Image 1 (cartoon, rainbow, N blue to C red):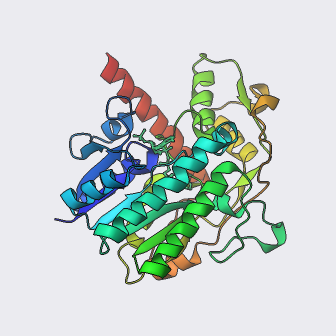
Image 2: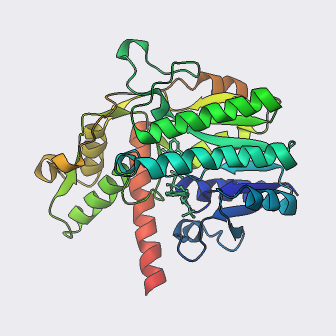
Length: 329
Ligand code: NAP
């Protein structure tokens, strides 16, 4: 039985990746900062809370990671834990930089010392590229990295640490440069979750207005459960490398809002208002990525259209709400 360790298992991607790996027959060990205070609802909703082994660890403590590697002897290590919100990173720049960079250095250092055969996945982000001139879009793996937020800077540093450990110490570490991917398990502070759950509340008469920041921005949005497969594929090819995971299309946040409200037979113009407090000091106008390398080299095959994504997110949200209601009754 193969063993996978996942940091950030309680997050959106951690839960879906765990489900995917369990179905492949892996033993899944998940690292969390605190079992008691972490949100285990995603794992519970996917019905895998009792299938994974959860352990508490401090990724700032090198000896702690070394002990975990020696105890579990994992085949694969997926590093998903991070302060993952761009917006929050402007409020908490130091904490974001510290966690997102030092954790990666510690994990790779522990692997260099006691686990050189372990294959590592590092969660990189499209945000690393910053405001790319429109004429050179879509973004490809070898584009210049020019991050435009503390989050993006932390992910860029973590990406280069990964590349350095790959080149300097021949560690199998792949960097997945994922564009936005969404699901019902997104935290409430992420805009897509806010839009879907807000529109459903408005439909039910439980909310009057939905406050959003800049809805002109354009992003490349995919479906998270299909993106975690690419992470596994990256660790199951001959060589480690960097891969862009994206749909190849950009849509504005306004389109996202409009389609969500239309699905629920609502006119978003009546309910959505701009809140200037939600505008970011710097925002990326438009980004989308070219997933050709992942499709040809990994055989990653993403087919879902933007319309299908919106439908899926709304249906999943209704399923989740009824699951929560049953649980609380
Ligand atoms: P998420 O839902 O925010 O989960 C991240 C997990 O990291 C949390 O559940 C938390 O688990 C742990 N964590 C550790 N330190 C943290 C901190 N200082 N603040 C907040 N959480 C912290 O993230 P995700 O959407 O699954 O994304 C997984 C990884 O992919 C992240 O590294 C993210 O930056 C990256 N990424 C995501 C996207 C996307 O669109 N979702 C795109 C590109 C890259 P515990 O509380 O249990 O410790």
